[in-house]
Length: 70
Image (cartoon, rainbow, N blue to C red; front, side, top):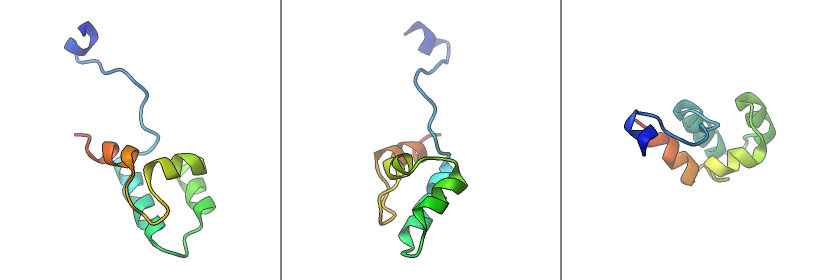
C-alpha cells in the first residue's frame, strides 16, 4: 500500500504495446498470415501471441488489459 501511495505499481510489464496488440489483431484476422513470421516481427513466442490475440484476431484477456491502459 505504501508503494502504491508513492505512485509505484507492482508486477511485470506487458510483452506487447498497444500498437503491437492492434497490429497482431489485424494480422491474425487475415487468413494468410504466417504466425511464425508475425512472432519474429514482434520478437515474441507463439504462446505469448495467442495469450494476447486469438487465432481469428479476437482480443483475449491480456490484449484487452493492454488496450485499456491509460
